[in-house]
Image (tube, rainbow, N blue to C red; front, top):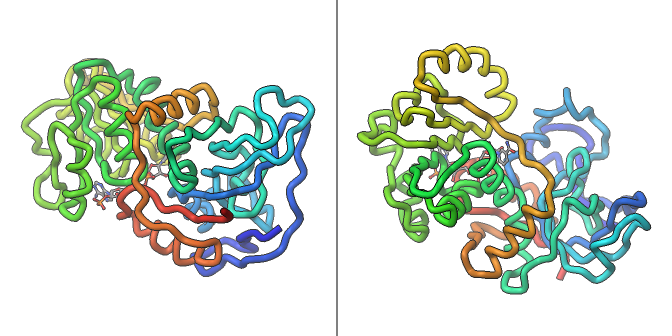
Length: 318
Ligand SMILES: NC(=O)c1ccc[n+]([C@@H]2O[C@H](COP(=O)([O-])OP(=O)(O)OC[C@H]3O[C@@H](n4cnc5c(N)ncnc54)[C@H](OP(=O)(O)O)[C@@H]3O)[C@@H](O)[C@H]2O)c1
């Protein structure tokens, strides 16, 4: 099968398009014929080698987690999915493996694609929607009527988190650059702060949740913006874990305010919930740019600038 592989960690031009063996499924896995893949920051961070101390260097590596495709083979322990199903999800292999004509994953990774979205949209949704849902519900404990500030609202996670916060009945303060103004306004946040014109730290209102998607603040810096028992939630897991001992000290004198971080979990019941919201027209995804597999270098160069509006997608097959 054709795949975009890397044989060493490095810059976006490290990719090679090669013929490699099709992956073989285990009894509890499914094989999918990949239709589209979306890029998340984890992909370009892993391409640079940022996770090699945890995941090793099993070259050749096929990157990519977010995928949609048709189920073409099922292991004998699979009971919910069947051949011919059109599914979307986040792969659970080391380094993913989506940037190829075929990919494998466990059943918990996938849900059926709602029939009101394209394959590009289906590939764009899974990681950012699972992250937004699980982070706001399970870590921030966001409740009806509460306020959430979303720092980095125009990116993949941010624009979906704005909508999920709305579905959960919260008020949204969106933070993004002036270049993202028109994009952000489509999602009708209660308030929009342009970070290159206004200092977020001098905000005149307190918030229940400070969702630091862009990850450029810290708990000590923003805790004055939190209401009592408010939550600072930073998505940069490894970086936040390192800072947690200091954050714990700050929590001692902070009226129950808490600093937290988060890692997305593979959970097809959450993905089915997301599919239901998509079906009901409550949740939309915005595609910034679409590329072919042969343009993977260009796609990673664009994505790692970190200023996309919504998501970038690689189309693999019809
Ligand atoms: N822990 C987890 O399980 C998990 C899951 C998913 C993602 N993540 C992490 O979450 C982060 C965001 O992911 P993503 O998919 O949303 O990335 P993305 O699509 O690349 O979005 C980045 C956004 O950040 C905004 N931004 C850049 N600089 C900013 C600043 N100084 N202040 C405020 N916003 C700024 C940009 O908006 P402007 O262009 O308007 O500046 C851009 O739209 C990444 O670090 C990713 O690795 C973690």
